[in-house]
Length: 149
Image (cartoon, rainbow, N blue to C red):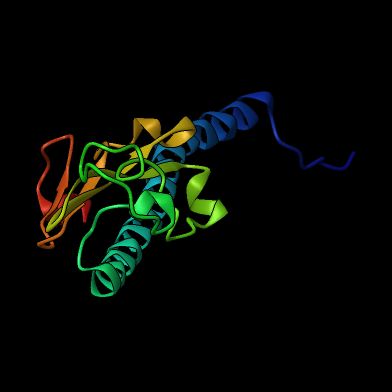
């Protein structure tokens, strides 16, 4: 009689348990890496929007009306054309799927840009990213700049 070589049920179950443990460790790390990548995309968009805001300032000598496509309206900082979705800058679709990029505060000589996570990105540890006209980078979670930017 020849000896058969095969896996026993116990050996197979040990392999399944090991794979389960590895998957339990690897998958959350993968998810965090994906969120970090999306956050980096949003940071790049904020920096590009800041460049566009500076270009807008050189053209009209004010940061106002950037959400109105440059149309001048009265009441800088209080008008709906001053805050909200920027019309002087087009947010890439892949970033817009995960972040709501807005001009959140405007005065003639200052602005604050925000990128608020939405959907699956809303559980990102850094929360809403902000960038001011002076280049100050911040996040709503209160984490350090090195952790989020």
